[in-house]
Image (cartoon, rainbow, N blue to C red; front, top):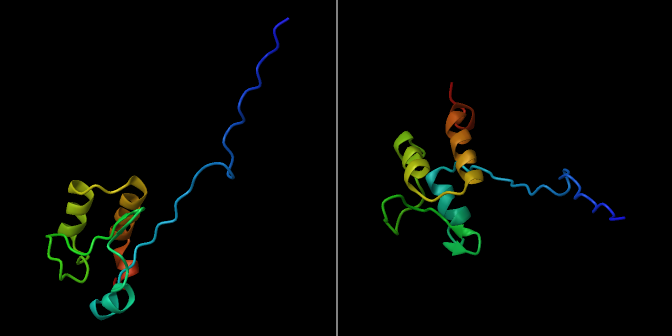
Amino acid sequence: PEQAQPQPSPPTANTIPGHTNTAHLLKRPFFRTLLGDVVDANAEGVMVRSIDGDVSATGVAFTASNIRRLLDEEPIAPPGAACLELAWQHRHLLLNRP
C-alpha cells in the first residue's frame, strides 16, 4: 500500500517573516548630525535624501505632496510604504500637534 506523504506544517509565528519599520521625523539640524555619515545605498536599498535629485538635500520634507509622490511614483517595498502611509495618517501624534 502507498503511504501518505506528510503535509507541510502551516506557518507559525516563528516561521512567518516579519518586518520592523520605523518612521523618523527629525528636525533639520538633527538629520545631518544623526544620519550624515550613513551610506546612501547598501544591500537593503537606497536612502531617500531628496525627492528632486538635489544631492545637497538633508532629507525629504514631511508634506502631503512629498508623501503622495513617494507612495505613488517611487519604488517602495510594501512594508515601507505601509509605514510611511501610517506615519502620514498619524502625523498629528508624531509631530505633537492637535
